[in-house]
Image 1 (spheres, rainbow, N blue to C red):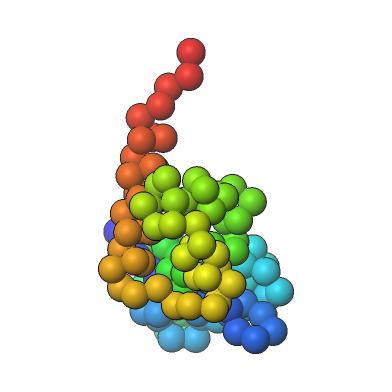
Image 2: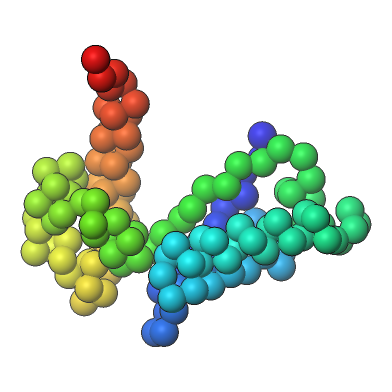
Length: 133
């Protein structure tokens, strides 16, 4: 199965979304949710309205969509789910530093990005193994 990589980034006045590995797929909105909806709508329009010659090849057949966030956008999008205290526990990065990343005051180094990503993936794996009785 092919993977459509969608980049979500914050600009000065909105969130933009674009396909990293396919031309002509763009979206945007005031929030991450709006940007995600906008780009999924654009994909739907392409697959329903365009001729097969005009559709990016990745959209022909089965594909999955994954989202790539910059750290600031991710931390702000999930702020209602993950507190800085929770993220500190998950990632090992102190709350003050996480606050700097979410405010855009500082950009995390690649090592810090990897810590955040690995912590989230560990949590996801742990949650997938949970069965409630």
